[in-house]
Amino acid sequence: MKVHFLKTTDYKLMPWKNGLGSTTEIIIDPPGSSIAENNFEWRLSSATLNSAGPFSQFKGYDRYLTLIDGTQVRLTIDGNVKTLKLHEVIKFSGDQQVVSSKPDWTFKDLGLIFQRDLIDAQFHFLSAKKVEQLTTGTYIVFACNGSTEVKIDKTFEKKLTVNQTAIVQVKKYEIAEMTITPDTESLFVIIKIFAKIK
Image 1 (spheres, rainbow, N blue to C red):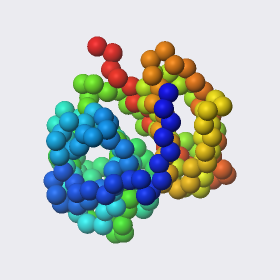
Image 2: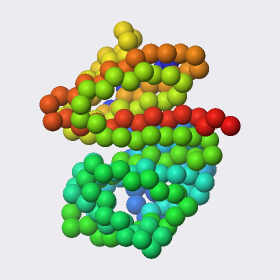
Image 3: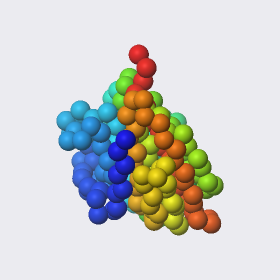
Image 4: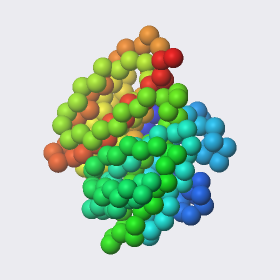
């Protein structure tokens, strides 16, 4: 089992795939892969937006997207209009054409992109204590506001502050218990990533 703690200074700022903006890459897997080469299995990133424009397309991938700052933004997905509100999570295909309208204020998103043929993923907001039984796969905890304590058995203990990330990669046949305890009025995202069973 491997546990990684990432601060904002560990993240990488890079251009969007379509070149029309920039994103902060939190983690990409496998290490050394890139969106430019289109050879990644999954990636977690965050972007700050203050103008209208199209999203990059990622054919063969699915996407989760949420707002972690701001109030709401209007997205047009293959011609259908969807208003995404703060801390609401949507899932859509990277094959789809997505355009954001110009917001009344700057907003910040958090998004997971993953190869749908290889990966199953879950993406949830939580504000209460969570005890997670870890089995084979990758688990990500991202602190949205306040602070959140992450404990894994007796091997790892860390308090995450805003925009910090804990990543736990559990190998086959390994079992562990993760306890996530947010402070009062704190909010975190928990993401579970598993290889699809073929």
